[in-house]
Length: 294
Ligand code: SAH
Image (cartoon, rainbow, N blue to C red; front, side):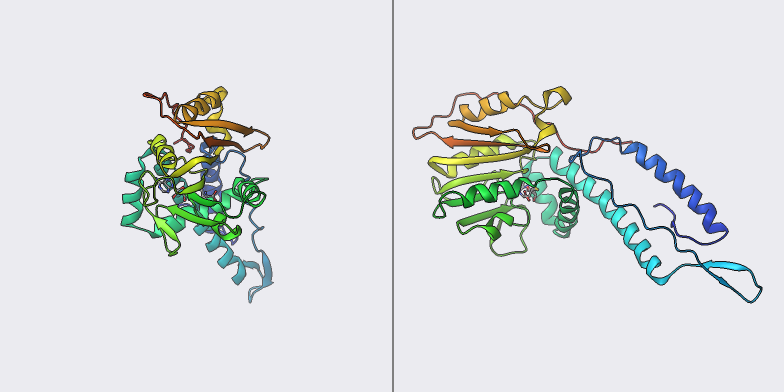
């Protein structure tokens, strides 16, 4: 852990310099390509408190404000949970859905750590894909039944009139179905819209789309938002054409693709009325959005 970086005299100052060195090391390691590449750095820390007073000896000393101690603790906590978030994020992108499910089942509190970090990252995006999808749903039929695969904090269900099955690895909300989304309890051909908003994380992501295909009615919509860098062949990401082609082979037609957002791509597919799954589908590997190790 980094030493405290608070303002005070003497030894504290020495440790602060060490801390600055460590921070430099950290920031050079964060040339890592983050999952949310454009995420802004955390707001600059407030300047150290240097309330000077004369003590009995007439020497000026600096004392930390009580507020600065708690904001320092907050900063340290934020740093720790940021690291924890990155670790969990990497885990989710590099294991199967079943392993992720078992992992969070063992310690469901990790899910809150993940989502606190996730929301922090997302708050820096100019536009949140989940809001684009919510607006799309609002502009369509409210009688459509929706399945939100990898719902996170269930923003879709909370913001539309439709009936929504919210699905995620962990649920502390009775309306969220906790399962590995490769195997949901939903009935076959029972939903009109399947959403994957930044949730094709597991190494077995095609099995999530196969599950969506199973639960979607013929003619149903498959809406996918994915991090742009995962589908950027110039940066080691998958070819978006190859990704679409694989989904078409699963029995869908591509209705439209929205590339105008800086951070994510949106795909709108519809399940064919008479859909037929191709014998073998060449699924591209989606680049994991992880921080590089030092
Ligand atoms: N769709 C939400 C949350 C995106 S974060 C939003 O846009 O705000 C990705 C979510 O997918 C996480 O909550 C993660 O737990 C979930 N997820 C990833 N793999 C999963 C799996 N195999 N089964 C269920 N949920 C999964």
